[in-house]
Length: 212
View 1 (cartoon, rainbow, N blue to C red):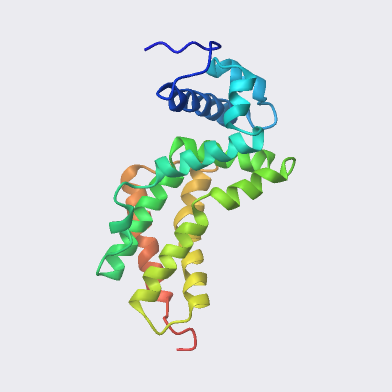
View 2: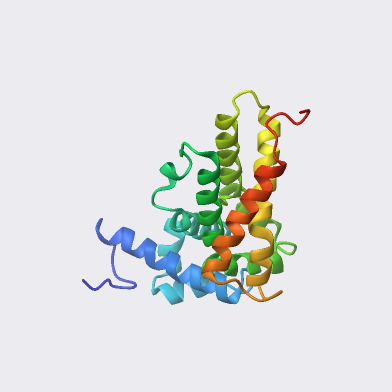
């Protein structure tokens, strides 16, 4: 069914399709051209809608970027995410989480987003605020900490959260750096081995009681 780019009021069935077109256009422009260069007018042109139609759905460029980032996070989230964090064996659970996190962090869109934030967050502080609010890192840390807490119920919450943050950093930092061009990229087999070796290193040093 064709959608008139600037016709009358869209039908109820057309409305989500128009929002999707706007987000597709915004994603392509933000991730290839950058945040500063991309204008609302350019997004509207690419999506084949009027500025008025765009503003009826998104209050402005920050709101549009927020929606783009939220959709990216949702798409990168594994379909079996709940089961991922509820394994009975700590090592196997952390291995599965590490693999899933690494696959998401090294996806083309996630890498493009990382490049955008590194290049433009200083000029546009709202980008860092949006990424902090919408991004999946805090959720991942919270859920990994819950896994560690479940494995050792007596451990302190602050300790398990600190440990979760360190594990996430160990898993992502070097492979992402290499994928961004600062070294040879890893193959799928190398990524899996990296994830498992990182978990082994983490478990060797991790203690449920930091005073132990």
